[in-house]
Amino acid sequence: MTYTMFYQDDLDQAMRFGDVVRGYILTNAILEKPSWETQLGDYAVNISSPQFSVIMTPCCSIEDKTIILTPLIQVYPTFLDNPYLVEDLTRANRIMSAQQTVPPYVWEGLAGGEKQRRLANGVTYAFINLFVYDRHNSLPEYTLYRKRGENIVINYYMIDFKNLYKVHCDKIISPTNSPLESKHLQLSVETREELRVKLARYYSRVPQEDQLVEI
Image (cartoon, rainbow, N blue to C red; front, side, top):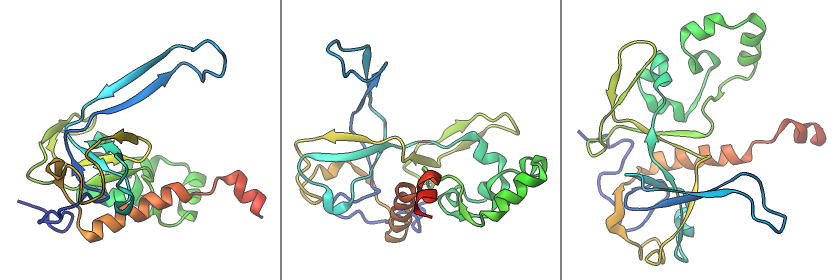
């Protein structure tokens, strides 16, 4: 079964923001500390080859042999402790009320003042840096091992906005002149807009100290 509301059945002959792709290698440097001195400090280079990645470059900026990717990763087992999310894990992509953000046993255990603080925030993104990808028959299943309840086999996945990689590939010239054979799934227009809005919200948050200056 294909979940067509989340994904587009027919793939465009172009790379698009939010596409699920495969075949890319991701690298990042791991530093002990910044090396502003003459002698280079301890460092390592981490190399990974995830089965699937997601394009985070806006469609119109896919060019110049460069693209931004993030690995498609397994969802958190704790999502399944929350009845509101169990009904549809893609709800984590949207704003929700304070009580919907945590399992009932967590909400009941909160002190009164903490409950009021959360309620005062109104509906908001509880998982601001995460975006869940819906099930699809071409995505492999895996087992979530849970501390509460039975282990569950699932094929929801997610991406983390904190986990971005710049990749250089000679074949990426433009959205249409790219290795389209690496394209695996494409979001629907509605889902891509949902991802775009949430990513923009993630980067547009104003820290409390700046809010005080603005006042």
